[in-house]
Image (cartoon, rainbow, N blue to C red; front, side, top):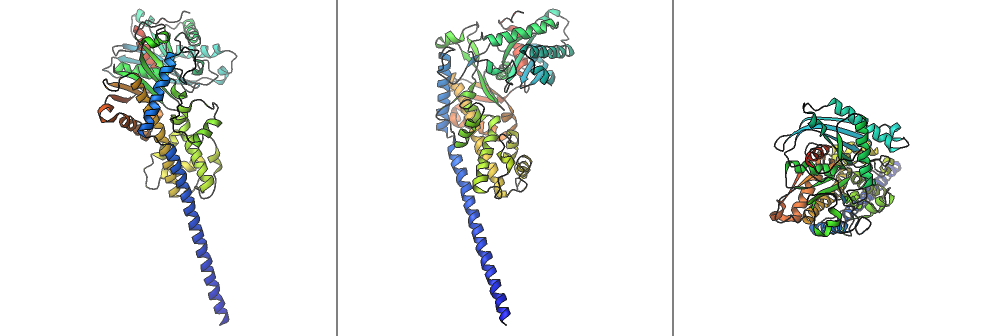
Length: 496
């Protein structure tokens, strides 16, 4: 009889202990969830981009653009370089024929040729060939070795895709558009970071054109480089080919930039009217370096900037480009893993690896519409080694991606509005803006946020005046349109 009483008491104690543990565990989970929600709410609040803030950013950007144009090349009144390109003529849509182009991105050389039949016809006979510049060439003691390699590959490509016209005079007039895409490796002689001068007479750029043309001539190729510019300007040329109202082009990918057509005004005459007979000048804004007290920076952005290779620089780029969006998400998730046990009480070692989350993977998680966020689970396992994540954790990941994406896209939208405002075209003229880059092309939610920000800023009455469209022909084809424009430009090639 006594033994039975002992057994009953022991069982009762066990139930009480288990119940207490369950309550404690439940209370702990609620605290962790509350802490997670607090971090998200604070982060979302700091990343907020209401219309008033977007207009403040746009107005500051306009002021920076004007200050840069009004200053001499030696003054530092603005964070924007506002590089004046040596493109003094854009296509008019009537150019026809076979054109060649080269796009250099990092260590990859993309060569293209295609036939243009006028703005009412699509691009035809498009050929692309991409090669990587060997390390042995890059390790050379002079930049001339790289130039010789590039010239040799261009010569091979042109020879394998010759012009079929029999008119030799037409062949002699062939021109080559050459564009640079960021990031261009610092070891490369074509590094865009070398082009700091606002003058179209930049000796670095002119010297490269001269050297490339000499190397092509030595190989017997009747083709000359007439433009060596940022590929965003190539996007602008493509936009202008199809629409006269195309006034700007934006790059939104691993890096960002903007280019637009500036009217030469008296205030800017000393800077702009240097080598062009036209009243228009193509300018590369270099807006990655733009900064403003109205930019919605958080502690995560501050730490990313401090630990980057260029602290204090490229602030706008670090908020809006594909190079950094995933890194901001990673930093937020790491804080949650450390402070709220987001991933079942552990901090995955791979989550501490900087830049391990790329923007395409971020987009895949963000745009996952499956019931259990299966893509999020797969990416967490693939990238961070998180083999088991709770449904709540996966929802949190998607929400963080949304906050970062919305901020970046809306700031990019404010940038577009700022250019249209700078040109004085918001209220009474149609303006076409061409956008190139993976964020816009492949990240649907980013694209939607960008469009909605422009609409919110301009309202129903004015938003129809700004038309945003994807670039024509795909990556690198801007070089072809620059070559087409060179058929009627007054700019002369560098003499060899």
